[in-house]
Length: 219
Image (cartoon, rainbow, N blue to C red; front, side):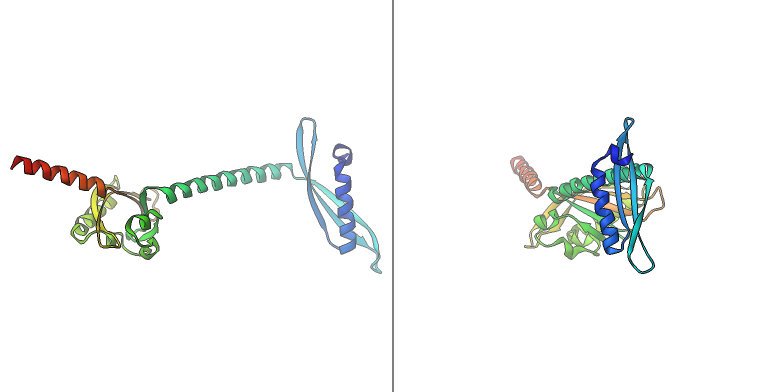
């Protein structure tokens, strides 16, 4: 019946028969048959049989309906492809984001930093792995940042948003709008944090210039 519904199987099975006898190995093959408006999947197992003196005697073939397992396998494979696609998209977003993205452990140490860190501050983010996040904050802003980060961690909202300075590799100060969100409180998980830092140095410079101009005019 399988041969009638899928004639191409005959040639495939002949290859399996020959390989089983020639190499004394068990041959497996999955195949599908369409009939009665549905597709069923089967698994073929061909086992060579020999006489006691080693001469080939023939073979046995067992065909098992694996349709339900195949449906599960196909569903899992489809879901994995979706997850891979989502991962690729997320990776593209992180790698091309204009914000620096940090992931912090429960002790506020950096366990991940996005490529924008090096593009903005001029030195590799890999140098910051394992360092406290406050290490990149300007000394004059560090105490305030640490206090506000701690407050965000212990509050129910778990949220921080403010402006801080950081030093560029060439010694110039850069201004950042920093947003932090802490995760894991509800499910007793490791209390990690996500932090986003947007470089607003040019905007801050423009604002300071405008404020100074207004002050001078009032004088």
